Length: 106
Image (tube, rainbow, N blue to C red):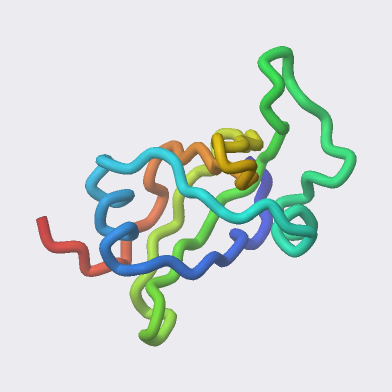
């Protein structure tokens, strides 16, 4: 992990709660130039399993509310997946919860 500002991503309340509770370990984002630039994956190195090397934390901000509800999580790795309908996505593998200000109710 670098000591840089976390990458901010908006997320629905349900998925934020699932991540904080530890039930959701992968977040999906469309494979677009926008996200490729944000994740720094253009020309990025890959490890021996093909995962994109990354050293960023992610700040998951709840949609439709102020940025007071969020969780900062470790981004362990990124890979790219294509489903049977040829829809390609980034798969963000989530590690530990670094900070939880989500107000998550278990």
